[in-house]
Image 1 (tube, one colour):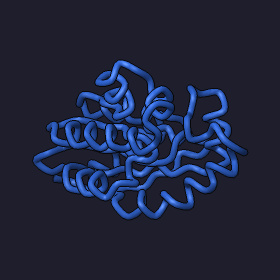
Image 2: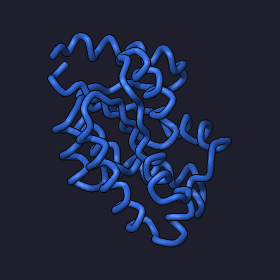
Image 3: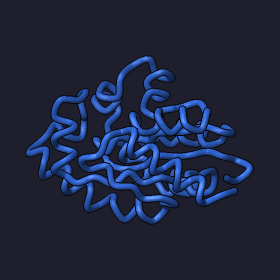
Image 4: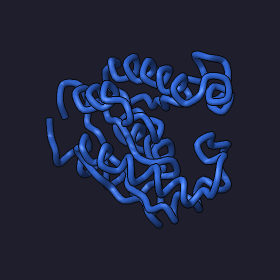
Length: 174
């Protein structure tokens, strides 16, 4: 890997960024960070509360600050929020400061995974399948545009996905 062995996981909600990121971090013996957890740590409130009080724009600004700080660290694995790629500044920092891994997943898989997960502010209105489809259509080109590695997570165990990422990172070399 480069002199800066950062690995950044991007992809839609429910793609497994946090679970896979933890496994990749273990495999690389690097610390793991989650940008949403960092935002909650900094603010002392959860993401839905931020969306409720500041709207998506307020949350995206907090996310931009967290990503700027986290990507400046050396030797980490970072799971980003699904919308982290929306801001050009975030895409630039992610692409420039580490290897970017796009965890690709279908809307069907997302619906299955997020239906029993924590509260998701962007799924509060309307049909979740329709909303996830809209989000994926808008964001998939942004994910693909900065990805060094793309891995499908549909129907695959976390460990299997993490092992594939570790193999591909090793093949990429420094």
